[in-house]
Image (cartoon, rainbow, N blue to C red; front, side, top):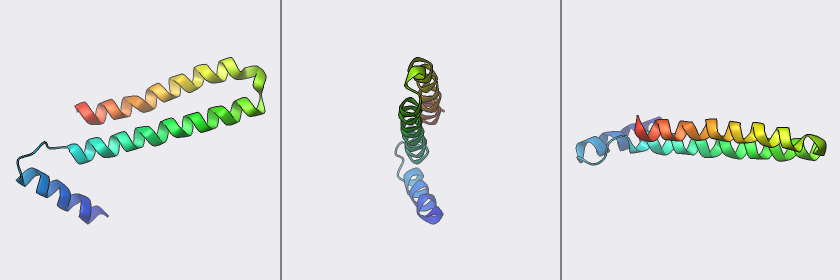
Length: 77
């Protein structure tokens, strides 16, 4: 797998195209997985304790925002 990524990155830099798209794609993939995990655990927590749904929602939104920040870092840095 690492060899495939290295070859793709090498081909990308040789073609003169946009560089860093593999890193941006992997960063966005990580953010998507993180948001999915936060949403899954938030729904599970509300199912276990419905009275705390407001506090759980606030924590879930903060967690999703932090996970999405990873995508922005990978796209713009």
